[in-house]
Length: 406
Image (cartoon, rainbow, N blue to C red; front, side, top):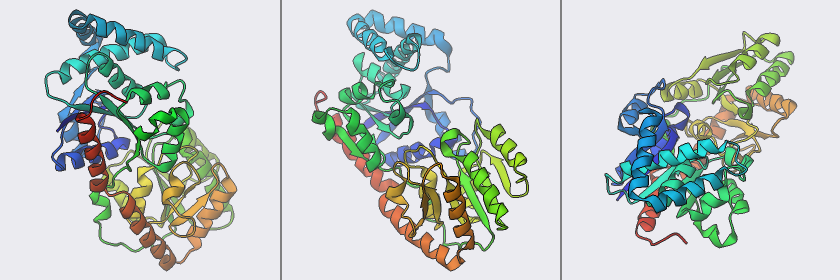
């Protein structure tokens, strides 16, 4: 079986779960061709991502002129299909959050993708995220390309489903993947009941580098780590304010913010304003190996997210036997059990976050070890990469043999 994967940006530090999924499929004998819009010149910290970059074809690498030529070639060979796809692209631009010329660029990207796909016997194409990547594969199908599916992660798709025309993308897809039961429920909201059967839950899989690590006891050091892009939805600014409350209670602690992003200047400014330079430290982007080391050196992972799908770093922390402090948001409570594998608190509540941090810092290490063991058992049962890849492989095999979408 030969399928194609299409991602807006690949490889990417925060998209390592896609790499794991592809490699697990290939280990099952599925041939996977990688395609992406961009990512050929990004800074990478993982050697595995460097390898993936060498295997990926990039639509924008040769500029817009190459896309325009691809469009000319498709018009010459498939004028009716091109006209149909152009109408679809303009329809998808209606009420969208991006102007109509960009949707015509997506059409040209689809033309280039179609030309590349025609050079190999690809039976199906799968996209990650229900944003422009899903639109490009939808347009590729309208041009006469293979049937498609896509994985919805959230929270962007859940925040603006109408602007993204999520209903239309799902209706014409062979199937749609949600990464949690919560995600599936959000897709049901926008999908006609007759198409509910298309929605499948396939969890993100764990990297074996995390769950094959020998047990390391929770350290006595009062250290917490937050891993993720520094942005509004992850809530790190709230974490800094909660840290100030913990400091005011006279509790010794250290918080490591492992990651980078658009809100780093504001977060650093807040650290300085609150006099937390000795307690809160930002590392910038780090490799998967460094993430693993940071989690093992901490008493727990803290992630005060406002909006999520289901963060992969929570799975990684639990696999490493570390408790998790996070919010009652999206798919998080499906994995983190309050009082059993960590602490859950209401999103946006700085007092509740500070109390959870204080409780974790005060807990005996033996209690934290027990939480970590319970978390490991839970995450390995739900997020084994080979088990989840087997689900996807079965879906691809079924749909590649099927007729037109239902």
